[in-house]
Structure formats: structure tokens, C-alpha cells
Length: 326
Image (cartoon, rainbow, N blue to C red; front, top):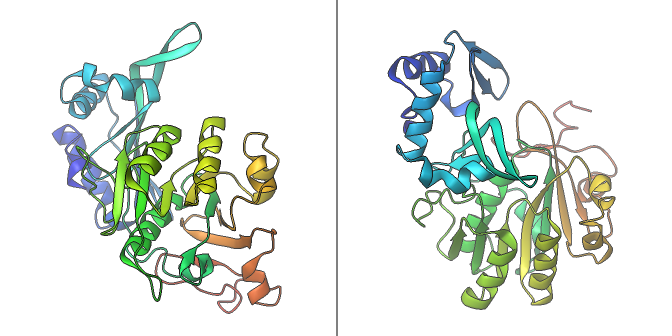
């Protein structure tokens, strides 16, 4: 939290600390809007801080982000976000400068969204058995809307694969961390625990990074967040054809929705993923709706004889039926 609070002017920092109080562990976002109260988003509620950011406040925050040099933030201003120490991501919005219809940079930034990166050791523990075939892992895709815990889960899954899980020996893992969210790297050094046999390509475009890692680091498993473009899909297919297991995420609300997208539908036609984990949006992130095999059969329903099952990584994984949640 230290690396986040340092961004704010002293008075604003004190107001935010009062608003957070003893709820730091369940804080998800801090949203700053010019001339609007500060919004704090927790797992189960939203709070408003009675402190309205001024133009000067936002300039202070931008100076802290850029270390008083906007030139150093050229790439970030074009992408619309900055990753800071600890892997926290600061989204930026305001007036956009374009050239020939292409975004060049953000100007007059008036909205900021600070998303807290949370390292939850053990978050993937109860998913791992579904992803193992003997001592080998299945290529796996995690699907869910934003803020459903995809990155948190694959971060911990990376650690467990690299350190070894049960009878499965530790494996060489390559993380392509384009937005520095999985490892939260600073100057190339991950701030999160990704395991002893993990190599990280930080701030590198996904498609290029996958090919670079295969050529240079001979990984057994590649972990990459938020596949989306056709170039990403082609690189992912090349990795799988090279015999590398791929663990990835995509934004989406359901397996059926993704299968209908032209850019990624071929991955399902070719059964590139042997496991698909679908997360659903709840007030608390990390709810597993189901886990599917390459034939689209729900493994959780099969295990429970067709009854609905929910899984939650906050503490342990529970059968929703036995908790009384039909």
C-alpha cells in the first residue's frame, strides 16, 4: 500500500487512509475523478471519500507517476495505463491526441483508476488437480469479465507449477508480462513470487514475447495474460505446435461467447486448450463457475452428478450445493 499512498498529496492521502481504515486487504480500486468525490471500491461495498480532487491534485499524482518527467511515460500515455511498484496498475483517461485516427497520447488527464494487485498465495491450489494429466499440465484458458481474479489465479498457478505441485515436478515456466501485472516487475525484477523456475519477459508485446521465450529460454510452460489480437492467437498456436503448454486468460462472460468471436474461434475448433476455467462476476472476485474439458463438458457438474458447483479462492474451495447456495 505504501507505493500507492505515496502518489497522493498529503491531505488527500490522509483522507484516503481514513476511508480505507482497516479494510486494506479487501480494497480493489481507488478512483480519482476531477471535481468528483474519491471512490473506494472494496470487495463487498463502495465508499465515497469527502475529498474532491482538484486539477493541482491530479498534476501532483501524474508527477509522482512519471517522476516529474512525462517524457518517461510516452509509452504509457499511449496505452492508457501505468504499472507501478508492486504490480499495481493506474488507468488514465482524459483528452486523447490522435494522428490519422491513431492514438498518440493522452492529454489533460482528468480520471485515474488505481487497481490494486493482490498476491494471494494458494489462490490456485484447488484448481491445479483439474489441470494435471499425470505429471503434465493441460493447456488452459481462464475466461472472465474484468475483476474476476484471472490474473491473481494465474500468478499463483505460475508459482505452484514452477515450484512443483504434489507428484508433478517443478517445470520451467516463461511468463510474458506485457502489462507488468503478473510479476509486477520493477527494472526486470518481479515483485511477486512466481516460483523458482520462472523466467519473465516484462513489458514485451505478447506475440513477440512468446516467440522470443521459446527461442531463448526453452520453456515447458508459457503463461500469458489477456490474449486478444490475431497476432496473439497465431503466436499462441505456434507455441502449442512447438510442444509448449500454454496458460492464458481472455476477457469474456462465457465459453459460448468466446467461441463466437472470429479472432479466437479457431482456437476452440482446433481444441488448443484442454481445459477452460470460467470465472463469473460476483461482488467478491475469484468465483469459479465451471471448468470444461476440450469437448466442452463441465468437469464440476460431472463430479457432482449435474449439480451446480461454485469455487472460491478467498479461503478454500467450497461446493456451493453443500453451502446451501443452490
